[in-house]
Length: 65
Image (cartoon, rainbow, N blue to C red; front, top):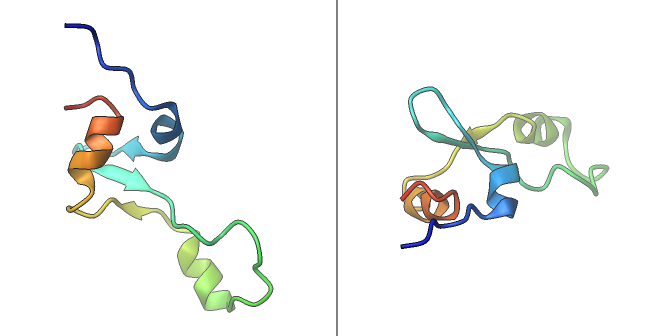
C-alpha cells in the first residue's frame, strides 16, 4: 500500500497539542473588521480546539488515520 499524503492546506491550518488534540484558529478575523466589535475581534484572535465531530475528518486530512 502506498503512503497517504498529508493535505497541504490542512497542514498549514491545524497544529497538534502536547496531549494529541488538534488546535485551530477562528474564522472571520482576516478582513471587514470595522463592523465587528472589540469584544468579537478579541475573542476571534485566540485559538481553540477542533470539535469532536470534526476530529476524524481532520485526522484523515493530516494522514494520522
